[in-house]
Length: 242
Image (cartoon, rainbow, N blue to C red; front, side, top):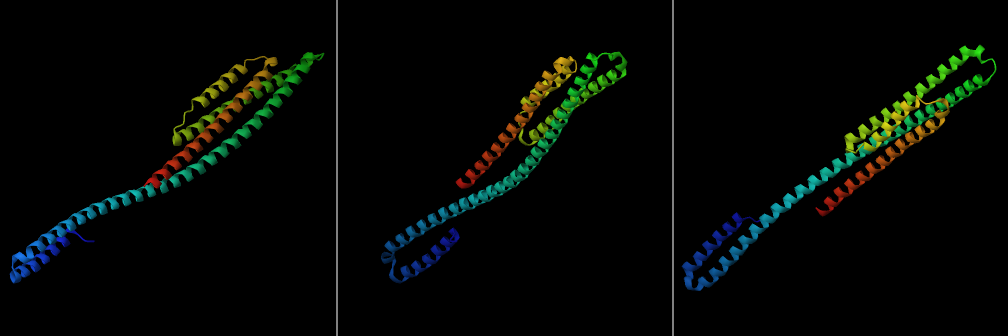
């Protein structure tokens, strides 16, 4: 690359040659030519300075471009890892939720069977002779209710744990899930005090609330994936502009 030092060296060499011409032919013949040479050397120096500045800017832009490429690669790797973890979390959530709902359905069926058996024993003549069986069935019905309550709280805890993991990565709000969880826990506590005739309606309403929790979790996962795609598009746009 031609630098200002090279320009000064060339000017010195040209000056020596012009001095020889002046010594041989006199200053009059060389004077007009000398001014033209000086003008050319000044223009050359200005071009060299401009070229140096442009080269520095180009180097700076190259460094920024490399930095952006590195950031994009890191973001891409982080996004892939996070997407994989999110997918695993979602699959685990679906499996656990499905298992809990299967258990809830089995407990509801057992509860219904025990209620029917208990009602049949109450209306049957000679019910006094089966007092021990009746007390045993009532105990089993109460135990089934307790299992349902524990199951609901387990679902609630699973929902809260899952929400906490997602919030650590994406800072999403968990107000909606907390509202559903509070409703489920409150309804479970109220349900334990209901009469036999009111149990079925309360069970159905409880299941609807559990389904609402799962639906809201799925919606938030879709929203999180959309945010990831938007961040990727932003990185691509910055790289293209650079």
